[in-house]
Length: 258
Image (cartoon, rainbow, N blue to C red):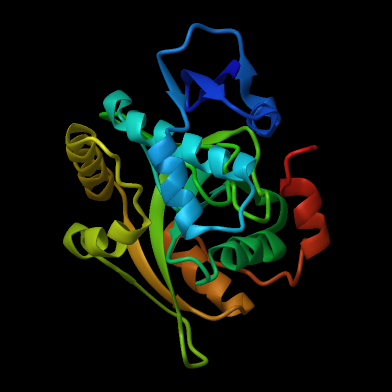
């Protein structure tokens, strides 16, 4: 058993893992502080993940099971995680969330391509949000999707945008109210095992949705979709300067060092 401590969203957490891979995976988050809770990969959760991904190696299954265990504890500390891609623009956080394969990574990559150095990555797949009375802050985690886009930073949240791919050549964005947003978000939430944690999670998401501007974007993969979402979310006018950052440069800038 490998036992080590990490810090996520300001919380010291003890991880107990069977395989050394998890220690390596969390290497940029290792600390010596006393943890507030401890997690491990329960056999039941490993079996569930193995049924869903029968070809996945055991150490990868454990990594994902440990993430699930952490996510189940977070609501007790005013924090939640969500399947989405979070960037910062001039220091303010913007979350893009949708079903897998919709184009979250593509969209935040387009922001970086066309807006350049003003855009940074927070986390490309599973950021954590700390919901306080007067602000909501997005934090990075090592669970950052297949692109590996993640940096150790946090950002006060500015807005949430739900993505849908459009079937025409136009990009559309509109505001949505919290009632519509919760239905859009349900599939992207992680649902804890404990009923008490689930109740707390839903309360925190309600507060999050009531506090932030919410948008639904139907988009393609052009510069116009950047203009569409950028102007709505930031309130600034998009002035086209062409491509500022190439995909190769984005990978170099946004991937955690090995």
